[in-house]
Length: 399
Ligand code: FDA
Ligand code: NAD
Image (cartoon, rainbow, N blue to C red; front, side, top):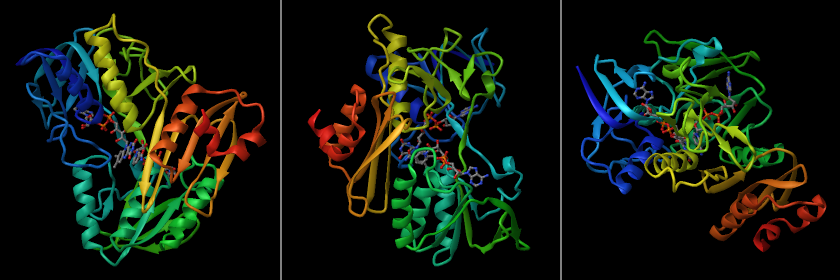
């Protein structure tokens, strides 16, 4: 049993959706392109977990179908249902999976009131658990994106939140201590409590297998109605291990998003691609890069002679409560903070080896965000950090 396609997109997330849109814009014939996804719905915008599906017409959708093995030499995929699907060109868009507590030696992830958040099924479940915990207590494990965004949503839904994470500050991958301290103070003003520098050691369950308390390594015990876990992700590369070159935990691709096998491309969270601005390969876990590298891969596949180099400036953002920030570039080197940290608009520049390489801004206008994006893409030489600090946002606005 089997089917054959010219193009197969493996995965049904953001990168898959944008690759399909780009194929559709450029024109694919009926039956030429297939998307295989383990999820039972068409690709959708993950950040909003909205119901606006990213599905153009004329594409074969193989949903609710897990691919269990891949043979890149034969150009075939085997599904869990036993079907072999062959391709001429494969786009791997398998994204990543949420790390489970079990990987850190704690059991209980399956309990009905412990929630993860990666896909629509998780989101629906989280909403159900949140509704049944109204007025109660939640512990949020992890101080990264999921932790910060879910904590804000829980508070808005009238649930008392305690955040627990092992580091000394929230968002340790991106924020400076000064930036983190602003957001933590803001969260505290909304009633969120922080327990930092420790991790979960175990759950206490009731007779129905529901978590009733969280035990921490520092000896604290927190009573809970629900738990949200956001402790990072692992890219879904296992189908290709031993067959494709991997780097930085992802599938290594060139500037055309082509892997070490010329018939296989990789896009989104699973791809490690060359970021020209930094002169090195990076794997990014954000929606803007998923969208843009997916479109670039399809352009490179369909019009290789016309598709230029992929010149991408990393862009991350978040919106929580009434706050909103954007970040462009890289957070390495020396940091210069600017603006009013007790007010609404402040930010930071990162200067590495004499050049501005990264910019962060909270509470900016559209023009101000465009200015920090532009200045970062130009990587200007910075001679005087004190002058940059005193000019602050006006430096970016003048470029
Ligand atoms: P994604 O995870 O979206 O899709 C992978 C797909 O592959 C899934 O459909 C999966 O089922 C499928 N799959 C995997 N293995 C398979 C197999 N063997 N067989 C079949 N199918 C398989 N970023 C940002 O910049 N700003 C934001 O505000 C947010 N907000 C946000 C909120 C939430 C709740 C999450 C979980 C994530 C974000 N992100 C974000 C991150 C962003 O959503 C993420 O970078 C993209 O979804 C990555 O897109 P991919 O398509 O690579 O993976
Ligand atoms: P993350 O990498 O942002 O944060 C993980 C956090 O987990 C760390 O900051 C740390 O505090 C904590 N942690 C690690 N090990 C721990 C342990 N043993 N016990 C307790 N805490 C531990 O990952 P995430 O928040 O889970 O987000 C998942 C993915 O979703 C990421 O790729 C992220 O980029 C993406 N996402 C992005 C956005 C956005 O860009 N606005 C929003 C939501 C999710």
